[in-house]
Image (cartoon, rainbow over all chains, first blue to last red):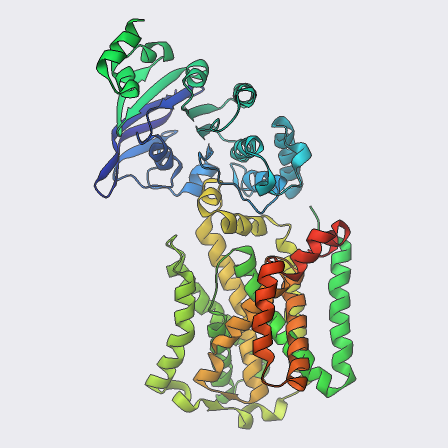
Length: 251
Length: 311
C-alpha cells in the first residue's frame, strides 16, 4: 500500500530551482533512504512534505488525501512527524516538556488527558534513554542527547510517517550504531514508515529498503541500495568525475 | 503536573498584604492602586510577551480603547460599572481584528502593528474630531456621583487574581505549553502539531481584555479621557519593563516586578524627584546584565526549593 505519493513537486527560490518535478512513492512500512550531495534538494523535499514550504506545483497525497495545501500542524496531527538537521529544540523548556508538547499535539491531540500524556512522555523518554535527563533544559544537553531528543519529540505524536533529516549528523560511531538500533527497534514496535536523509552511506545502505537519489533538484536514481550504489550516474554525482565513477562501479 | 500548593499560598499572601495596606490609609490605597493597575497590565502582557514570545507594544492601545469605550458609554448615561467591562470587550474585539490579520503571516509584523495602533488611533480621534477630538471627554458630570475609589481598587484586585489563576493554569496546561513551544521555535512548534494562528490569536484576544478594563478604570478615576493621555505609550513601556524586571514567562515575575517598580518609584519621587526614570534606566541595564531572566529567574537559579514555589 502506498502511504505517501509525491507527484511532480517543483519548488523555486527566486531563480534557483530547488526541486524539479520530483516524484516519489512511499510504501507503508518501508525505510526510504533519501541521498544526494549538498544542495540537491533533500531538505527542501522534507520541508515540502512536512508543510513548511508550499510547492510551486505538484501534489502530495498522504493516505489518499491531498495534503499539498494543508498546514503543517494538521499534517503532524495526521501522523507526519519530522526531525531537523539543524537542531530545533524548544531550548528553554525541559526535556520532559519538549516531548510532552509533542504528545499533546500529535495524533491524539485533544483526545489525551494530561495524566496519560505525561505517562506516555515518560515511556518515550525511557525508550530513548533520556529519562534521567528529563528535568534539564534542552539547551544544556550535549549533541548526542539533543539528537535523541529531536527523535523523541518526533515520536511523541505517535506518527505513521517519520522523516529523519540527518539525525546522525555530528555523532560519533558508537552513537550512530546506537541510534540506528533505536530507529530499527522503534519502527518494528510502532509499525512506522520512515524517510531517512543521510550523508553516511554505510548507514543508509544498511538500514534502507529503498533509496532515492536527488541531484540538483532532480531524482536521478531510485531502487534497492545495492542497485543504486552500482549506478554510474549516482557515482558520478558523488565523485564529480565520470572516469572515477566508472572505475568505482566496475570494482 | 500540578501547581505547587505553596505557590497559591505565596500569591495569596501577597494579595492579602496588598489588601491590608490599602485599608490602612488612603495614601497607601493610592500606592496599592497604582501597583495593582500596573500589575494587571504587566500580568496580561506576560501571557502574550512571556509565554507566547510576542513583543506586544499595543497594551497602551487597549488601555486607550477601554478608556474611550468607558467614556463614550458612560457619557451616554450607561452605568459606569458596566461600561468598565464593556471597555474590556471592545479591546478584545480590536485585538481580534488585528490578530486575525497579523497572525496570518509568520514574519514578525506584530511589534510594528501593535505600536502603530498606539499612535494611529489618537491621531484618528484628533483628526476626525470624534469623541471630543483633541479635548477628549470630561466625565465628572456623568460618573462623579457613583465614584468610589475602593470599588475601583477591588475590581483591579479581582482582575489581577483572575490573571494570576489563568497564568498558574498556563504553566501546566496544553495551551500554555503550546504558546511556549511557539516562543521557542515557530516552525518546530508547527511541525510538532501546534496551531500557531489559533493559539496566538486566543492569547492575544484574552490578554487584551484586562488592559481594556484597566483603561476604563483609569478614565473613571481621572474623570477625563484625552487622546494623548489614554493612548500613552508609557503604559506599554512600563508593562514590558516590569515584566522583564520581575521575570517574563513566570507567574510571579510581573507581580514582583510591579511591586518593586511602583514602590521604588514612590520612594524615589519623594526623595530625589526628577531622577526616578534615570535610576530606573540604570536598573534595567543592571538587570539585563546580571539577571537576564529577571528577579524570579535569578532567585530560581540559586535555590531549588524556592524554584518549586516561585513559578
